[in-house]
Image (cartoon, rainbow, N blue to C red):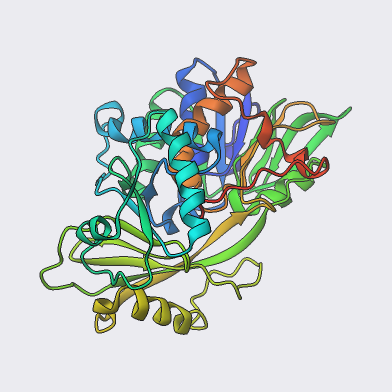
Length: 384
C-alpha cells in the first residue's frame, strides 16, 4: 500500500461512505486537484451499506428539509448524471400518528415543508390505509404523507459517486486506514495512515460513527456516539400490494417493499452505545409487539435475512457540519443520527463550498459542533 500512497494531497477526506465519496466528487468536479479519500475498508462498507435506503424530505428542522430536497433532486437524476442506476422507488413516506401532540407537531412540520416546496400533506386514517394496505388503523388519529419520498440502493449511490470522482482525478484509497493527524502550530500538516504519511493542510472528517476518534487526533471534540440499529428482510410476501414507506411514529416501527418481500426495522430504546455490529435478538419482542399492533398481517411472514449497522448519534439527533475552531482547516460532516445517507448529495455540495470559502446554498452554521457548549441544541423531531 505504501508505494501507492501519494506524498501530498490538497485535501484528505476520511471516510468512504456516501458522505465521503460525495464530498470527494464535488471537490474534484469543482477543479480541486489532489483530492485523496481514505477508508479502512471497502468503500461504503461502514454504515452506508447497512442503511435502510430511505430518501425523504419530511423533517422538522428547516435546514434538514433544504438538505433533503437538494439530495432528492440528485437522486432523481442520478442515473443520467453518474451513469449508475440506483433503483430509486418513490412510493412516498407515510408517518402514522396516534397521539394528539404528534399530530400537532406534524401539522407544523408540514407547513414548513410546504413553504420549502415539499408536497407533503396531512391525511386521514382512511387515506393512510389505502397507501399502506398492510396496516391496522387501531388507535390512529391521522398521518403525514409525501409522494416524492422513497428509497434507493445505498451501495449503488456510493459506486456512482466513486466512479465519477475517480474519473475527475480524485484518489480513492479503500483498505487504507487513517491512524492519526499531524498538527503544526494548530494547523493540519499531515494525515498518518497505515500505509504512510500524506502531507496536507486540510482534512475533512466524514467518518460517521468513528468520527469522535478522528476528531480527537486533531484535538477537536465531535460528540458522536455509535449506536447499533438492526434491520430485517422478510421472505417473499404473496400478493404484496403497493405500499408506501410506512413509519409508525409512536413506536418507530417501519417497513418498505424490498423485492418480493419487505425490509423492516425499529429503534431499540434499551440499546447501549458501542461499536456492536453483531445481530442480537433482544429487540425482537418489542418489534413483535409493534408489528402485532400496527401490521398484524406480517406476523406469519418469515425472516429471510437481516443485519446490524451503526447510527452516528449526537445529543440532539442533528448533524455536525462545519470547520473546527482552534485547528485550521479541519472540516467535518458527521453525526447525522440515521439520516446521513439521504443527505449525502447535498452535504457533498456544502462541504465543497466550505472548503472553497464559498457560501453554501443553505446556512449550516447552526450545525457547528460547538453548539452544545453554548446550550444551543437544535433537536430534529422526525427521526426513526
